[in-house]
Length: 344
Ligand code: CP3
Image (cartoon, rainbow, N blue to C red):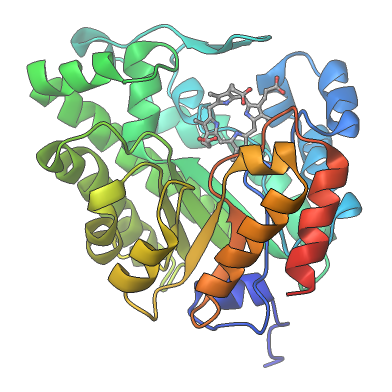
């Protein structure tokens, strides 16, 4: 057998420390890039871009043409799953996603049996990326974790406190459990299909892991993430998985220990000292520069990036932002950050 080519980012997820941290940038394809805005203007709306393998492949590769990044992340969205389940999902310019909220009654009408067929164009994009990417680049697939996706499905849009979804989980526990079961099963099938199409690693985006008490965190975040990790690995043994429970705070160690993810994405509010002292020293971590430091740029950005790299120098570390890059980000600042990480 020919040995597989060395992919520093994949190797790091699998627990191997590198001499300098590999890096990618959360939401690295997007509106801060003029070439993305140009393709986006050609597509018939955002979801069409996600389901068009020609355009989705192109925008996935755009950031790698500009910056020396170690990974490409599939261009898609976490809300393709509700769309594939038959819920109405729209993206309005300047407003973010708008969904027709599910209720205890309409959850039963979701169509998990057709979801994977609906997602076939996204899987086609993964195959094309696999065929195009240089061997040393890691291809990252992803899905939204069930709680985060459920907050949009129940609330109908993003919110700062996820109150509607949190109330729904408390008032309608059976309907909520049925929704989570559908999301867990669909996510397992979708991630397994991404691995089969050529993804090296997948990330579970649990972007709304905040605002939950410990019992809700266990039920709504840990359990569904754990079931997905186990379910994917039952079909893809040892599948490499990054978990990103944004805002998990005091629940972070438990998330890492109980879900079985290989690597832990840290948001920018996680103190470096907490991470170095309380997370197992073999556990690969990813993060965690505040995206607004990248917008502001200059000495404060460089100092903080260096502090992060130094804090994690003794363990497997993937350098990244602590949440997604924002549209206002100057490209020159991204160039500087990548240069700095590469020189570390
Ligand atoms: O490079 C990449 O990472 C691109 C792939 C990607 C997108 N969304 C493209 C996108 C990924 C991994 C996501 C994840 C995603 N989507 C999350 C989790 C990560 C996070 O930031 O917390 C969430 C919560 C969503 C849901 C979503 N999609 C929202 C709330 C919005 C509107 C806000 C925004 O950033 O515009 C989107 C739209 C979206 N997804 C855009 C992109 C490039 C912008 C839409 C456009 O071009 O009009």
